[in-house]
Image (cartoon, rainbow, N blue to C red; front, side, top):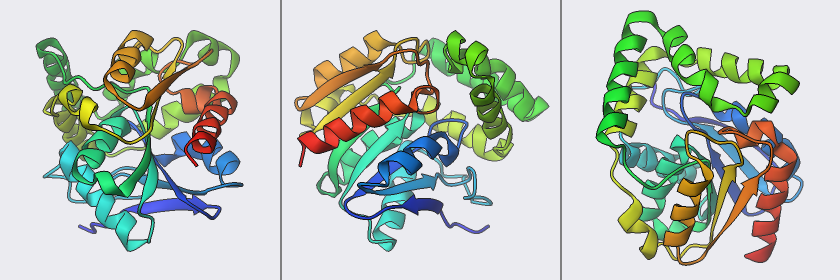
Length: 259
């Protein structure tokens, strides 16, 4: 299998790398790629096995493996050090990345993510999703997840966003998705790491996020020594697609403050 990450990029200047969540690909950052590239070199990779980065041997997938693969790739395209942002699972990858390669992260964006590991109940739910995906493919994963991904207002008032998200989910390969579910289930608890992260960090969370709700984001922010929080009004778990203007404004404000 071809082990080669694919990415899209636009703009010039300091690299801003945006890492997608699960079970998604870089298209969740289409609006950021357009808007932020006027002032930054915006790089949007598809993680191994997702999106354009397939086929890919994902048998070893873990958060640290994903971080290592991403680091090697960014090195190869001269994109280090960078500002690193991760949405949901991309946040887990980003925390693993900054743990291993702290000197290569100028600033950190943790979007609709969490520091804690899965609970026992959460791990059982992951196992059920793997079984459903093996039995019925991505249809089962979409059925189990989609209702929690967006704010109700997004689903009702912006059906094109909902349909684009549904299509992105459908497009991911089942083997990659099952590997990623296992990697999330077995990920470490990043909570003890937070106090050691000296990188300026913006924690961002959708007002109506039910997967990683605002109180979870606040706990993460409280553990980070150099951080602040932005609540994205009107957004659920995929705030980058639901309220891109607000997300972009918060990111630009952070980048201006750390210059």
